[in-house]
Length: 233
Image (tube, rainbow, N blue to C red; front, top):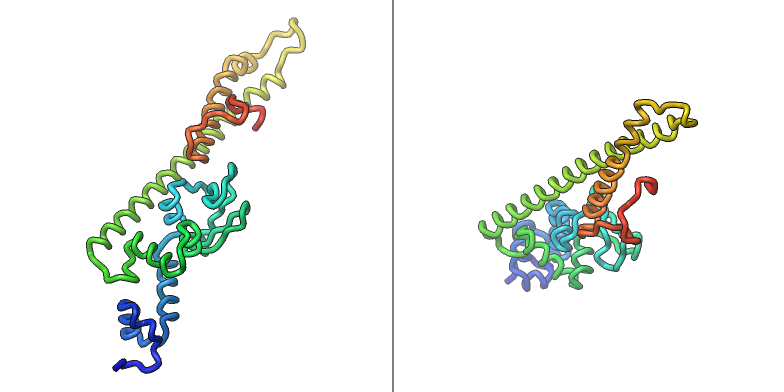
């Protein structure tokens, strides 16, 4: 005979749910799943999970939406509440909503998928091997994300330094151009003339590298098939 009268009979179908009921004295499987959802949201980082499932890097909280084809990154992640929203197709929600939509799963299967993939052991009895493997994978993904963020910051710094250099030469050429052949050019003007092409080349190369890093594809040209021009920035 069930020691808890009034307990949801569905608990009897899921041993882990029944264990939770006996341990916590909760009388509804709905409360059990509410607890599971709360723990998933607390223990699994949304950005970490989306990068793992899609294989796409997320830069500055944005990426191309995995639910519809697009060129621009309109899929936005909000770390403060672990939610996402796509301004292109309107998809949004939390991690569970993402997994349900991405893998076409129902609610419980989505929970099971997350629980298994991240070794949370919320819907199954824990094993030390699975736990250690999941923790190692999560640590590896965090390190990879930190390395990408560091590389992106360093590339941005190099790009803007190159842009400032090219802009400085461009301004010197415009402002100190000799009015006529009778006026000898200044030393700064001659330096700018000598170095502006090299500065432009470096700027174009860094612009292509930034585009490649953002898109995740080895595309080094724009839509016209030519490198980006500093004058178009």
